[in-house]
Length: 82
Image 1 (cartoon, helix red, strand yellow):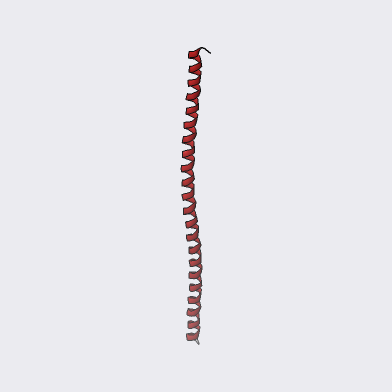
Image 2 (cartoon, rainbow, N blue to C red):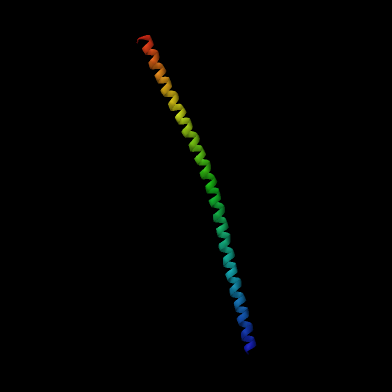
């Protein structure tokens, strides 16, 4: 009787372990998917950062060009005496 009970305990333990391994595998799959999503989000964030940096440079350039143009027009009118 003890041999059957020991055999059942081993079988039960193996079944419990396989169930735990399956749960760990499914959680690991979820983590891998989350990691992939995080990598994609990071890449998109870096791409957006570069876009913002480019737009900022263009904005500064246009602002400086406008200021220089306005100063040039003012200097032109001052020289003409208008």
